[in-house]
Length: 369
Image 1: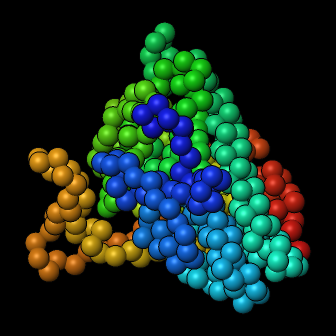
Image 2: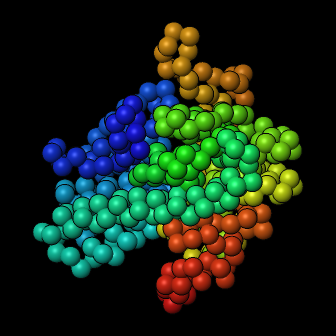
Image 3: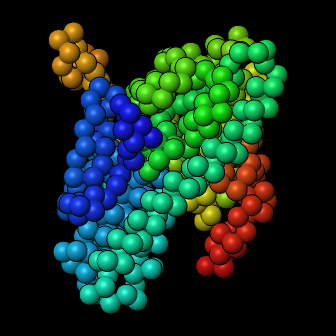
């Protein structure tokens, strides 16, 4: 998508310099910085410390990390070391394991001399597949928005609410939850997006930034405002992303998603999840018991990054000294609260049978493992 009129992806390979580049998202939306990742450890740091974030982007970054690592050590031990180093970085997003498993499997029988080049080809392929998946999610989500638009008066916007950033910075391009928004905007369908701040890291600020960059009407709101807006009839649809989805359709997403689903259910507001198929963990069913929830540093809760009155980017403490902070990064929304899963193949019910019917080769392969 575009930043100041220039098209960017969140991660890309600079063929002229033979370097992998990313947008360093620690500074968004206050500053736009591009950095190069040159070593296995730099890729691990970028994932762990959230220079990159969002399940699809984490998966793509890990693939490039393996490819770069193999340029230095293409042996079986080198491949294993790359896998073991990267798999430890983030425990919740399933795309990380999916990407690393794919790299390991496809490279297992490739000779050492060819491994670096083949690994880079696979990484490029994973990135391109992600772009196509998210584009297709947008097209199926657009159909839902079009139906809602038909109920509106001329010029009246379809009002969407989203949580966290499931936008293009969380993927290679397009985003998941934002892709239908971009498609609707491109077809001149009026929309307005309520953007949750998404404490503690305020990733909603990135969503507001990217939507504003594309001229999409939006309002940045506190996390606790969503239920009130639904009660007042000011939300037509909730759409969020996911970091891991179980075989029965339970969804793990940024902390606070579950509360939005409860409010939507109580107010009869459709609650949709934009779901790229690589985020489905076919090995598990019950999200509440089977998905590990990442506990992140308490400093993310007790401190906040922003721009001060001197126009400097600074971190400030929001609690008194010594107050502990609890920071579970994700929560699980049970499938019973989900209206539908918007996938690259269409909209599915959030159920085991429906997902298996939509992705039979994936569900079947897992059963046969």
